[in-house]
Amino acid sequence: MMKRVYLDNNATTKLDPLVFAKMEPFLTEYYGNPNSLHAYGMEVRPHLNQAMGEMYDAINAPDEDDILITGCATESNNTVLKGVFFEYILKNPEKNHIITTSVEHPAVQDTLRFLGEYGVDVTYLPVNHDGVVEAEQVKAAITDKTVLVSMMWANNETGMIFPVAEVAKICQEAGVLFHTDAVQAIGKVPVDLKKVPVDYLTFSAHKFHGPKGVGGLYVKKGKELPNLLHGGDQMGGKRAGTLNVSGIIGMGLAIKQATINIDVMNTEVRRLRDKLEDAIAALPDMIVVGPRDKRTPNTILVSVRGIEGESMIWDLNQAGIAASTGSACASEALEANPVMSAIGEDVELAHTAVRLSLSRFTTEDEVDYVIEVFKKAVERLRNISSSYAYKLA
Image 1 (spheres, rainbow, N blue to C red):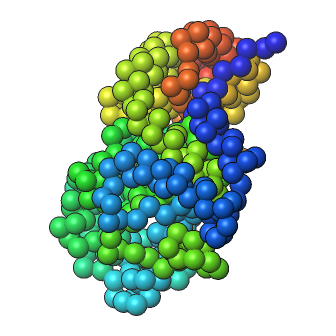
Image 2 (cartoon, rainbow, N blue to C red):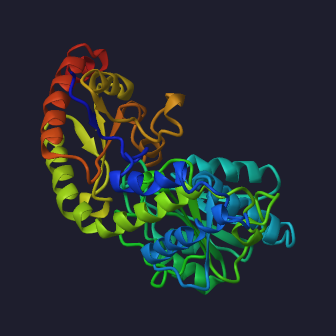
């Protein structure tokens, strides 16, 4: 049987076996609707309360604030951006300015482009050569019409960590709402909302070894938004829809385990990532984006000059290795990697990016195997690459 190695953990992660074991009874035995008044409904409520407590603890959210359960981080991001539009911009059209970055996830960028069709003025701040927007750029972009800043905590392509704490304080001082997409941060870097004064924060269970189809939205007290979904009084009437009981319970334990294992991510996983990165960087004509000490500990975005990213992914896949050319939510577009383009790399390099992302389940043997296969793939593909031959001529 062919060896299989999964290095696309920024796209999704395997379900932690402990999480699966915790979820299983709520799929087969304790399956009642928690809004029901009979025993089947009532018996699941304590477990839901425990899971919600685990989420509050993981991000150190104050008790008076809300965590809403959603279907995914895309829904959470849409809830914030469209909610700000309905609650703030429509009611006060003079404040119609939103600031974001040029490398946000499509769930943010596409939603803002949609709102732009309805009169919202959106500023997309460019990143520096490391792929980061600096706090001073945000401060300089704020005007008296600015209502919201939306900035990711960590980038899904590069792993680069953004200055969220600084930007949150800038927004607080300016009286501007602040939202952060923390999907790539949970379980990789400390997320403490008593230290970082965000108004809205989004996360998704399947990015930290929880189940797919369930996400969260943190909302600071006093910054409530109108519902994106109507039709029921679930989540205190703030998000309609029957609660995904097993998913919520799984997300609670998954975020707890992710927080417990954050030291593992920043020691052992970082060591394996660095070992892989060193081996790749030692090959000729490689560009790794961003200083490794400013990235999440599991992520490498490398440009392999002379080789189309899709070709590299094909060779890796033939050897049983899962990697990507960027965000799984946009990977079928086969366009130039947007982050490589945003940091100013030329068209060729933007088309040659490969992302490798590890998890706490990645082993040393797997990394050694990937190094071996990666080297062979680079050699094979460059031998048949006309663009690389032209460069050497």
